[in-house]
Image 1 (cartoon, rainbow, N blue to C red):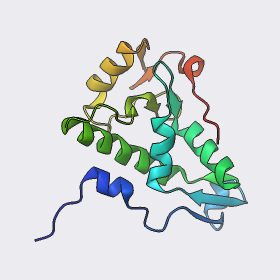
Image 2: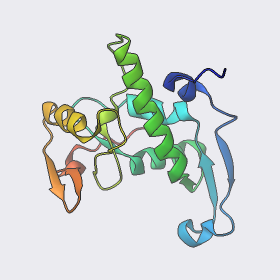
Image 3: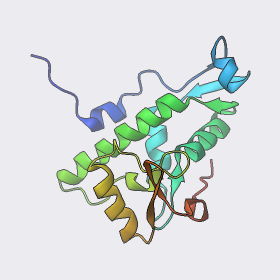
Length: 158
């Protein structure tokens, strides 16, 4: 019987990442030409972990910091989002086991300030944590976003 990996095991499994390559083929239509990094999961978690209370970050800022770190044009948006999701679940897994200092995943928003429904506890838990830290969550069409999130953006140094 195969044993299911924990979220923290998934976070620690770099699978040979980060990898740097050229933007080619159909990808150039969306991202242009140049170089791209596929980050390691722990790199995404490390940036998320540094966001202080009362501040926010979006996947866009994480991608920009990783692109700068690796001296490339862009960071893969798909894997960055997936690794943020894994980091969120790994943090919640650690919290359930009693750890006090976890990655503050609720401070990481989707591009545009949108709350990520796939994070642990879904929208209700995220809204509560964000409001506790002084942010206002509003409805914007079908999405829930942090109002004026740009004012609270954390720009990580590399």
